[in-house]
Length: 533
Image 1 (cartoon, rainbow, N blue to C red):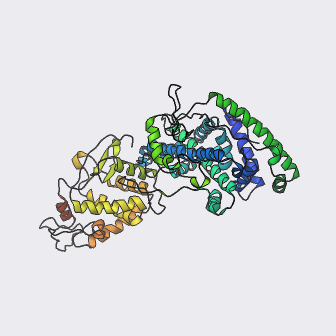
Image 2 (image 1 turned 135 degrees about the horizontal axis):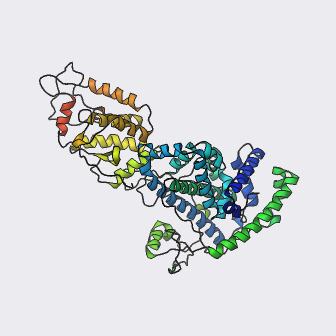
Image 3 (image 1 turned 90 degrees about the vertical axis):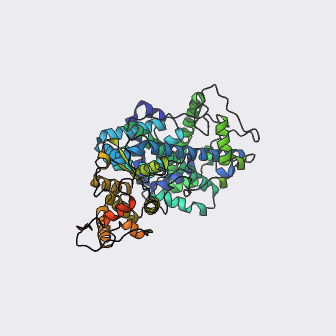
């Protein structure tokens, strides 16, 4: 039986040790995979009766609850991405986290777990579903586990104000069950898995966000227990548990123990609900702000919807977001997405990634900066002393070629496009490494792109493109060979023996390309102190 929520606040370490021991015992009982074990256990010992036996009103509120969880999780992932994106520049966050002591990493994870589980009883039980991800000892020993979880939950296009759906943490067993979910004939099982996955990822998301804020010394978000807007659903009776299935799964003695534990757990939940309801606040379902007791939460005049909305702006946004189609009818299970849908293209300058490409934290920072700042700035090179070099091209042909290469790299992570991008930026600064007195380190540029695209073989690929450029009569960068331009006024140089394409008679080769771009104004340069992206 899980430890009590009260123990989390009074003795966090003892609470965590009991959880670790319990999950280890479960794993031994069901070695083929704990998700299957907990999925079956949830169906047998679920807090509510079977979904198919609910009234239309009860189903409506359960579906709203899951949709609310997904919306809160999507907003949390957006907030954590915006907060942490600047710290991925130069691998700062990774270095700081990996250099922290194991004890500090473990304490931060444990504190975040306690803060989350002590507020939401449902998330306290959700620790069953993320034994690996929320194992404090694993985070102490391996700092990469937290970084992997965080980068997997980061929003790929953080300039979108309202992400359509959250990102779920991958897990082989849970993902396999989700893939088969649509083929199931039982609505009860479909709902059970949807509920489990929502709460599993919400717990992981909150813990990761709280840990991040504490580690970076950022303001920690406040969790509020939301007061229910409808009568609590009745819990299952002890005799409604399928005793035959229990005996088949666990044996005679274990089945009796589970039935007894279920009875005690239900009693504990009733007590916790009464205590939390006494101190709970009304929370706006759109902006998640708690009521300060001075604001009246209006209802929908047409259907008397019990979903609380704080102000007129929240009502207006919620109406357009979907309540218009649902107003006046009970929600059905078909209104609930079974899995995370693909991200759709937005109105941003750089849209979400395509074909399964997953952007790194540093690349998300680059995309966020490009979408936030002027469209004339084509790329950002982060220098020392928090300065930023903005690369731009007045010539429309050069700009079009660079954008085509850049967008392909940002959207798909194509290795060839990334190498062309890096080669072109290195080509730009090969003879002018200090524009306007600011030192530009070519090695730092290469490292930045290597970190952004997680491309350790970048230098080798760029050197190959350098050789391709030298074989071209015009000494054009490789990106201009792939994306041909109109060089009507371009004078191709004579073939020379000089590796850089120069002869005693004048400037030819790669410098001729710079002449086409314009020596003094071919790029824009500014420096500023970096701020929040």
